[in-house]
Amino acid sequence: MPITRTDRFKPKDVRLSLWAKALSHPARVAILRTLAKRNACVCGEIVELLPIAQATVSQHVKELKNAGLVDGTIEGPSSCYCLNKDAIEKLAADLNALFDELRSGCTTTSCSTKGKE
Amino acid sequence: MPITRTDRFKPKDVRLSLWAKALSHPARVAILRTLAKRNACVCGEIVELLPIAQATVSQHVKELKNAGLVDGTIEGPSSCYCLNKDAIEKLAADLNALFDELRSGCTTTSCSTKGKE
DNA sequence: TTCTTTCATCGTATCTTTACGATAAAGATA
DNA sequence: TATCTTTATCGTAAAGATACGATGAAAGAA
Image 1 (spheres, protein in one colour):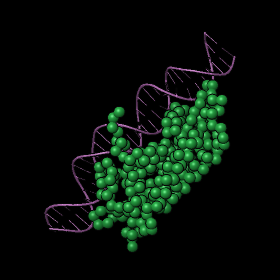
Image 2 (cartoon, helix red, strand yellow):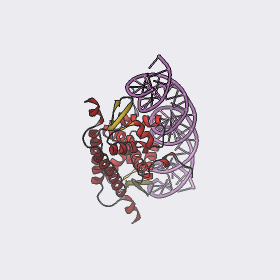
Image 3 (tube, rainbow over the protein chains, first blue to last red):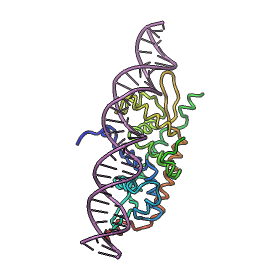
Image 4 (cartoon, chains in turn blue, orange, green, yellow):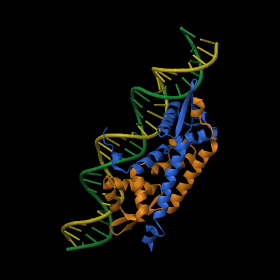
C-alpha cells in the first residue's frame, strides 16, 4: 500500500477527522436524524425526505456505513438501515474527549484579549 | 446571492455539517489540540509540529478562523492564535444535542439484529 | 416468464479541498 | 536604507467530494 498523506499525522487526529468527515455534509446529518427518529428505515423513505436524487442518497448512506455509523440489511427488495449505537457512542466519546482537552489547556486569557490590552 | 445546494437542507443540519467540516482534517484537529496545550501560539510553532508546509498551515488556520473556532492577533512580525472558547462550547453543545437525539430515537433492536434473527 | 419495484453501482461532469512554491506585506534588525 | 524574519495570499496542480442519469441486480407480483 502506498504511503498516504494522512500517515504523517497522529492516528488520534486522523481518527477524529474521519468521524468529523462523516458528519460534514447536511444530507448525512439528516440521514442520521431520520434513522434515529424512525428507529430504522428503508432507503426510499430517506429519498423522499431529502432534496437530492436516489443515487446520491445511496452514496451518502454508503459513506455512513463505511464510517461504521450505520448498519444495513436487505429486506426483500428494499434495504433497511439503522444507526449503529455502539459507533455513535464511540464517536460521542471521542469528541467529548477532544472537547475536554480543548477546555483544559487554556486557563483564562485569550491571545486576542491579551493583544488588545 | 445565488441559491446554493445547501439551502435545500435544514439550517440545523447545515450548521452541524459546517462544524464537522472544520474538524474534518487531521491538521485542523492537531492545530486545535496544539492551541489548547500551549494556550496560544505563534504560527511558526504550528508549522514546526505539522508535516505540511507553511502555506498549507495558514490555509487550515484560516478555515478554523472562518468557522469561528480560532482567534488571531498580530504580534509584531508574527501571528498569535488561540482557541475561541465560546465557539468551542457552542460546537460541543450542538454535537451533544445531536447525540442526544440519535440516542433517544432507537430503543432496543437494531435492524441488523432484527435481520439476523 | 415477464413486469415492477427498490436499491446499488457505473460513468461522468462539476465543484471543492488540499497542497506547495513563489511572492507580497509588514515588523524587526543591522 | 537594506536585510531578515514571519506570515498571508496568489497561482495552480492534483486529488477528492458531490451530484445526477443510466444501468444492473435481485426480490416480489402478475
